[in-house]
Length: 382
Image 1 (cartoon, rainbow, N blue to C red):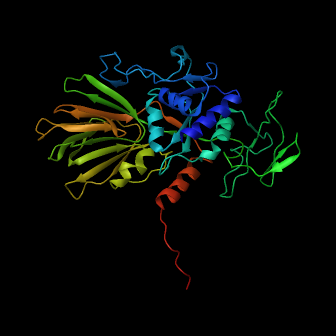
Image 2: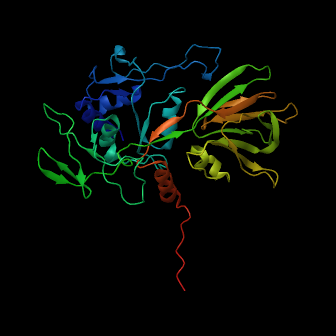
Image 3: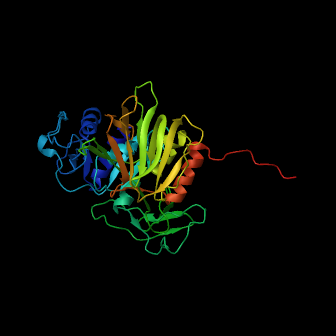
């Protein structure tokens, strides 16, 4: 993957696109693949503090370790947020990218480089072209029908862009497509497009809901706060006892949990831990919060779906046999003492991800390709 990333950095910087790299990635591609540390085109990007998010909120000091990456220290990027984030890996890398922006998140382009790739609709060989299209370096055809005028009918999409031909006077080239081919007016050549991308003449986004999760002690003090893309899990941790939790919805008692734990998931997270625990699979455009128990010691506790405007709260009662544990997207695990609570509500900052076609097509194709959704040999006619 590092070789692919290094090649992409070289190609994109040659097109005039400024690259912001994580310090550890910048170090590796420079040492192993000789990527030049051009101060104008390649800069280092590190997560920034966002007021009101993180852990130990009363302590603003950072304990982060400084990494020597071989680039000059003054080459760290200090400008506005990037126009586009590109991840080359699996679904976990998308969640990591989201944690770097507790507040507003730039659009994220997910390139498949992991094992499953439910949320990574683009292939590695498509990375540089897709980045250039997303940034407007490859021009769409103005004569193409807009996404509002044409509904996707299930057939293969025509390409919606015309490549720029790079030369000393390079600019946006006109032209269009015909019978799934691209035509270069300057060279008179016709070739098949590398891939179809977008719907009509639009690049579609999925605004993926996040959960605003706050850990509060018995005195009402905010201990930590996170935005999570998949789920927040409250479980028994290393305790041999069942987790004992009291759950409320808009300050109305919901239920008493006696189980290994409970999952509060987003629609995006409905195909992750929640699905494995028996929860429903929810379309990413549905504004909802899923509540799924983990191995409840009762027959009647089933997964529930709540509207996105509710505020859910779960606390450890004083008569619980032991403390509980909470994790956010599988990370930042914290101990919940008796009297501590976790408040969960919809975040004001969703994660926009770029679709290959649109959110329904991408989601259904991922269900079929990754989970073999409802796959069965077709019944023969009588």
